[in-house]
Length: 300
Image 1 (cartoon, rainbow, N blue to C red):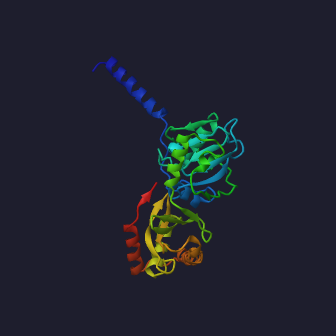
Image 2: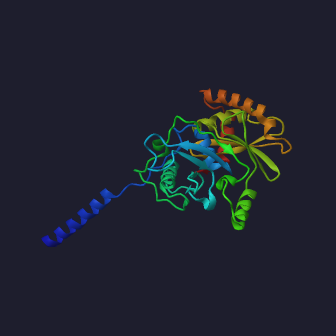
Image 3: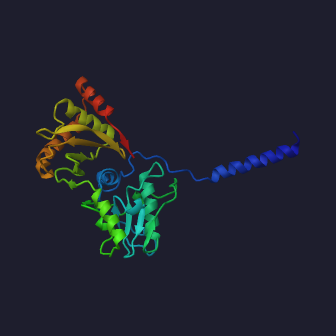
């Protein structure tokens, strides 16, 4: 091979190296994307288990796009599963269940948030670009001194506010409302939600500890026969979501959410003790853990 050929190859190789160096890396995977935000467990609930709910967030000083309102409404679902919406009345919405395009839900939602806040009024955000390592996270944009307080709704009327709807839009909203699972936020524990699915009722609770710590604590209780909520209740299992554990109980369908407040409070007391235990799991507790793990799925 001649010198000219070697020079040409070297130049081509150099160009490839430069391209690789300038390429922006995709967002890295983050197991607990909402860690560091107020009420991390309710961010997970909004993302994974609630059908129709809203909360209010605010940009930190200097982080809102120009001409954007500083407050934003976070919603579980928006029409057409839009990631965001800048409504005609100026309200900005962020949809939490529009899906992820990276391994960091916080970056994905931050991308949608900035797009919706920057859009003209009356503009839905139908899609957003993939997040990268340079994309800010919600933790970088939001005022984290404000609490994150969830309001559960019976339907999706919050989509339209006081706007007048034509017949087609009304019919679409009615269909969406009919799909909503009746859900009640409970008082005895943060991020605990009673719901009715068909003829069965359940409580789903987002635990605040890392999923492995929570699994061990739940295994201790289950092995000791202390994982139920009284009466005919049964711990069905638990699933992993955004790095946290979400146990699910089957309940008496004749009772309401209010009937389980005291039992849930008692469970949380037992759970707090189990979390603090530093003793190795016993054989029975390891078997209980194996059973819980065999029924687990991971939601992202």
